[in-house]
Image (cartoon, one colour):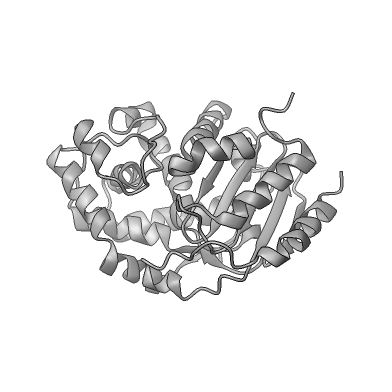
Length: 308
């Protein structure tokens, strides 16, 4: 199986479809991104990387950051995290407030916005917001094995100015005592984590610990236990694409986490970490071409976790 040929073929076949979907224009800085771009990077557990298209163009990882913050929060408080956030698919939009009322301020899972805000609140414990952002950035440098990663301050400020629904979610949960820090502190960290800039190659490297039983094979460093890596992958498979998670599992069959910046991190356990990026989003807020590309990749590699 020639992964470079597969990556090149996917880019070539998707060329006529560049620009499909709609960029996340409710975040003004993201509205400026050229939609006619697509990149893919595949890093195998033996450390080889195959890239094609715009794989070295940086983009805002947005909600993909929720996977890494969940990893940090689990490292801080372990299984106690599940007292404050659930583990079930939501079936609702990523920024819905409806379920929170019904479930008394306990978000359905850590990948909807409300759940990710609780996770950020957990990571913030004992820190000033600036320190928590620094901890997140150092962790990303560590897992991506790349000190150059940085946060786009313009994107963070753009989200801060327009993130009214996130403020509503956080205040609502604060009313249920499920947010322990001042809302503006928690959201300051949340908007900054979402504004981390990465390209497909860096993102594929960062996700490699989830493909390799919790250890990054590029560095040999253990990030999480094999059991925890398996559980994070399970959350990504069932909840990583909001109310499109079932369809993604059906078509692609890999744990994955999307972001409204157009990126998807996907994991083929025991085999590879894959990052795709194309800015246009579908009706559920998931990257339109990225999902198609991963469906093509899974079909050509047989990497679906449901493969016989």
